[in-house]
Length: 548
Image (cartoon, rainbow, N blue to C red; front, top):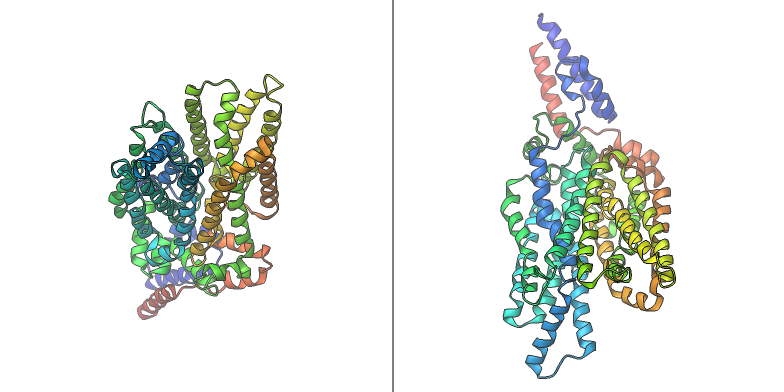
């Protein structure tokens, strides 16, 4: 072949590469099949490699599982734990504990967990920015292992205060993990798998709840002798994560955009994707970085006043409020009473509760398989719509169950339908949406806001539900139904579909809602060549002209 013809071919490839970068239109890359080596530019769908699968399991089992486990760990052994509180108090002071003090101490044991989660959420931004996503998860294991040991030895030390303090500390662990794990997985996942992997944290939360319910059965650990072990088991997943997570890569986006280590980010992507050519994904990260230069690194305060992210912020706040204020914890609380009123024997209720937890796990597992085909928005609408309907029918069933013989069975059906509805949408999808609606600079602050909202609403429900139950009875579910309906309409009119889109494309969609169409076009789709890419182009140009 004549040398000049080779040089001409190189020039053509370079010209087309410049055109692709400056237009910012990634669809053009699929047209490069006629330009020699640029055939590699055709976009490939990401696959679930062994590395990606294993890091997902290590991150979720070591962190998300603990969140769910500690939600349910104190439910079954509650009578035995309260007896320990009373016996310890009597042994110390020679008088029995008053009912008011007993109620206060047990309320603290339960409610300090979500309060710790709230404070843990406030630590997300500084930690993930300073030590990274993986580094934060590793550090977070301290907030699990230490309280697990303390709770396991509480009977030996004859101190119920240790349990109360440990519940707060382990709440900090849950607050951090519930925000950092979705962020970590979302930044590592290819866009066609981001939804399914984004639901994995919620799946492990439900598995954690189920395992706590199983271990809490009276003949296993939910008894007078086994409950300290039941509480201490939460440290085992943390130890496993501490051992295995260091063998997996940090988030490539964090490594590239916040640490500036391109070679390390490429190696991480190559391990996660299972192929060597990751230039297109590196380029997309640089484009995202260039398009958000004007934002800078947003703090929570700046995020709350930053107009280009106004509707994104409102959306995640509403979805997290809807998730927690929709009554999921109230339904679980009421479930045992509903089962008993339907004729289920007391000794059998715990097994029916375990079965309900199993339904929750199965439906969340189903969500992992359909979220990338059905879409996030549809699952949210189906979920909140189902929960709203179930709450209304449940209220009717509870009101008339004393007069209509088959109403108790309808109540059981409503509980199961509600759990199914919540598991496919309201429980898992807000984590996915929070990752997708925000880019690298604003994502830590966004997760702080979302996590704080989540845990604060969780704390409020735990604080006031008992008063609602006593004051309103079955009608309290009408309030939860109204919240589900309001959240449904907000999602219908405001939240867009994000499946199969890059972070940059989602940002453009939301910019239109914020009234920033022209700004988005100019910032995101012009002059997106990163300095490092320019340097490479200059070297190639120089090589071509030197050869000439």
